[in-house]
Image (cartoon, rainbow, N blue to C red; front, top):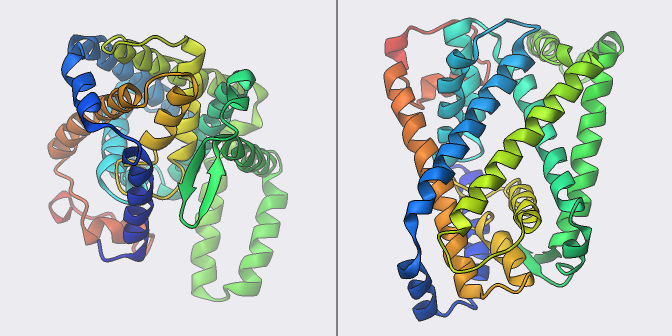
Length: 349
């Protein structure tokens, strides 16, 4: 918690939360919460866990060229990763699940991290697809401002810059996968120039294992499969948005919820406090308000949705983490950073 990244995230979240509450009428907001029918959260949570299972299957598919691991074995690790993202800063859950996978299945951390990064890139591309499928609604968001430090950006700006970032990253990873020898030579040249000696040797080994993790991208069929499963995952999550909407006294189209899903998940790539506090909420409320939903009702819905996304997977991930006997410690961080190659006994975790 002493790291500057954590405090920067807290500051960003505070700015986004200010954006949420500055126009809020507290009496109307509490009334919206009291009138909600929370029974609709149950099917929403059920659909969300189906989406998490599909995520575990996708990760199993991505890792298959390295090691075939059954989906039922990947599911607990996937839950632990999402729990870690929700309670630790800087998306530490991604590192956490890579380390646990190494300990349980012997998959190199750098190789599994390659698959995790590619997961995120495909997720980003699908989110952008959700946004641009709704271009008519997107035009109405041109004047909705979201604070980012000293700057203000529109949600449309976020979509445009997100497109450049995610599609550019996808092209880079595809090129690295299709031309591994060339990528390795270029990477080795940079390592030899800037990181000579033992450090360079270690980084070179990490780079090679990372490239191994991109093996599946060499097949166009694999790329299509990963894109298809990514789209399915986020459509299922949008179904959860739809179920939770029925708990409140408003109706919007499924496409508006797709747009909201795309926008809030693009916004959560901005560094923030653990659990995406503020960065999830402010853009989501803005999308609904732009569609004519009362700001107090939109705020109540978005905050309940956020909690319904956060609490169940966090509790399940914490349960699986307790079963593994793992805690996020300095020893675990040391192993994740690659400063030691030794497998540590379970009692040291």
